[in-house]
Length: 185
Ligand SMILES: [Fe+2]
Ligand SMILES: [Fe+2]
Image (cartoon, rainbow, N blue to C red; front, side, top):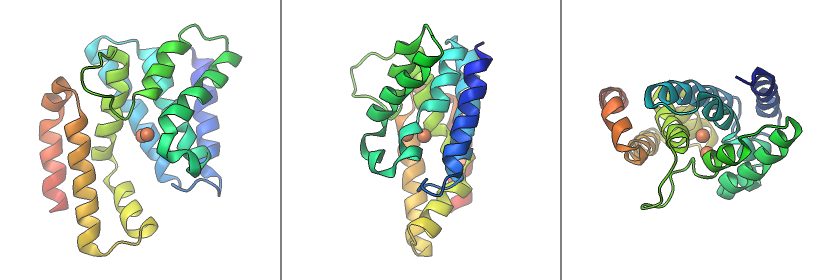
């Protein structure tokens, strides 16, 4: 494990999340932490490269937390930024990390994805099940929605997240998903 890279990224991402200019607030840091944890878990389970998946999970939303204007294409900018970071560390699996970042939002159907890409994309989607408070914060504080609209916003976000999962992750997280939905009401 390249702990030099992982330690650096953890610090760098925390600092970027703490900045006033980060539109998403610290909730985004907790989201990224949850993605790292879930991605490493899935990588072990599915036999993927845990190091690549962990590094890509730290980097997957780097563009959005750095500059909100990059949000719409943050997967593309994020892949470029990942390359710049990892070049400095002379890392040999940059291309695979870039693919994980580029395709973390779920790629087009029929495109065959590596198991590492699937781990990061699935971990991103399931992290919402662990961070419902962040979604509520986004709904009620950032977007200033009413109670009913907020519930609808959170429910549809969770529903889309579940539908994005690979088939095997759908089976793995089916119970957790229905529990979370039951709590939201
Ligand atoms: Fe993202
Ligand atoms: Fe994300």
